[in-house]
Length: 381
Image (cartoon, rainbow, N blue to C red; front, side, top):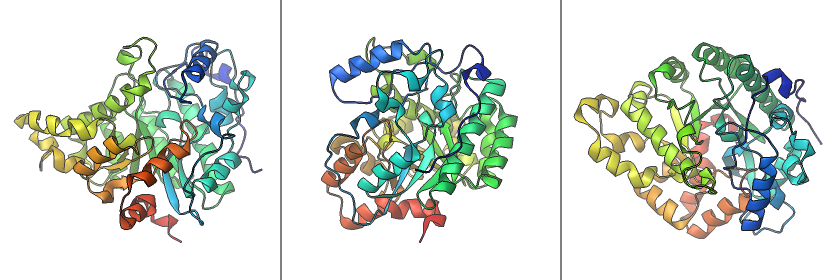
């Protein structure tokens, strides 16, 4: 089994308050398993909003109905990796010491094995929720960013053709982010950048991030935007993981933030990818458009819906009849991408839902790989 480099520093290097526990990401479908996961998370100490722990791998031993192609041809744009250092960032209890070994068994080789079963040729890697948690600052944030990016780049080198990399940034430090962009694209040969929908209750369209997006626009970068839970909304419904609904709403908040701050208009060469079939974006887009004030027209010179139609959306954990019906009413098939959200979600959830939706063959091919190849031409064989 091929391995990337091991992390060479532990949680102590990041101070007493490191990542903390976000019980948001669902890792199974039964209430009993959710209860077990909640009990496990109680032992982890405080994790910051947006940090997620690997868990869906617990299903790998179960038989799944998967529609893997004879020769893998899918490009999975929503696929997470977990460096050894990232795994260790869990407060006083390390992930490798937990009672459920499935939560620590993720590895690059196991990811490739599951990709083969699901007909995935290449997966674009991003760390959990797409970025470094906002409660991590300074040297800690910069170090974890670099460690995760280098680990992902090593996976790309170790498994030629099987992985690509969305590099993360320490977004709350714009100057450090600019340096990391340079390093990611020149030294690591990253395919794009992964960001989150929230950074310490600052939305990604906030003017503080303008220099970062100006540089990404200059580079004509692909930017993958993953939802997280803002600090305001982590326990709105006690006992209900916020990922059930808050992730989907936070995608809409991020898109709205980009609109009202004119990021889409000012950075037309950035290719944005949003997740989970757009979350609540397809349902709320017309409402936002109808209420968009005239004084903000510069943020959407051709109208809100025209700006949204330029965006890309992956169908990870959103390949169900209602989500796909709403999304395909809003954007053309050319803007849809295949994704799985592995290892937090079983690949079969997206694979089976996508197959059962009954897209025409030409649309299936476009979503599986054709649309992604326009974004990542290096993957053309």
